[in-house]
Length: 492
Image (cartoon, rainbow, N blue to C red; front, side, top):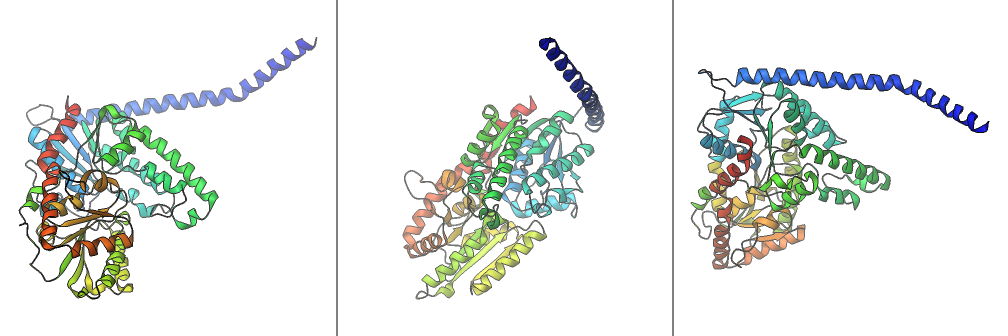
């Protein structure tokens, strides 16, 4: 009797849960089916749109190759990769249609191309179409004071949707690091996906900074002081890293710019079968034209920094270290030392950052020795490098460091951060000889700068020669060969 009662109770309980959850399951199933149908309908519409846009006047279908680069009018190393990649593809596939998705709505396409020539000495050999995106503000870091990585990534999906609705390519190449757009273009747009990764959106180093409760530009002091907030942020970072790995694995071809980036992408995306190192193109040959001799165009010594005015570049470290150097050189005419900070400003936040750096130099009393050169033409950049004795770089875990290579090619003795690409790929011995210097702290930078300036002209000349001999592997020609070899799979 007890067993019968128990069975009856179990049956009634199952009926209760069945009646409770069945309507929900039916609704969820219906929603999933509707979503799949909607996505299929959108994909069919996009495929038809693609056919109409990619058909030439003679009726033949043209291959459409698109680059997603919302800041293509900026003047950093990432933009140099974009223009060199486009030029290489146009040489090999001249009949294709080339698209650039950009958010630079305040300039024309012609002005963007003229800017690329002025800053990088690069001209494209065939036309390129610009698709201007109005929602670039959704990927601005200033829009997300909290959960910045997630906010920018979700914003990039909306920006990618805007791009896809305007023009549907056959091949989609993300050249700025917006991996969350990959599933959209692959599964909705039906595109083959390529990516050139300059810097992983999240890395194991970032996880370790939060785990160790260390202060950094991406880890505020108030979080490091609170164990609970640190744990919450660590969980958030791990969840984001998981999602980043999922979307990254949608790539058909992955190119990374250094050994450091390779290690992180392999750990996060797990797509080693289609991942290659493609060193970014550095205009080595142009800088090799600068005569190799002791800099004598100006009295004293110039110290030059090249890099966009972004927080991670840590220009403040350069100014503080330079101030300490001036204190060390009190007996040796510090008035003959000058620091020139050269870089690009992308937006008002970067301009504000430059103003803060100006105030820092005033607070340290070195404003007479520090100059800022913003968005200057290529020839002016070359002139400064031809006169400089030391090239400074201070970014922790710089993914590669095109500016570092340019300094070495120009015959400027490099002093870079002892991490990332400069440490693993660039400022390494050439045939057993020293090619430059590495440092980490203010005192380390100041002491190393003083050491370089104390060297004899003959010793500095030998270091310059070693550095020049080592950078040929970063030339435009080498980039074209490795880039075209890597993306070949996208065109089969």
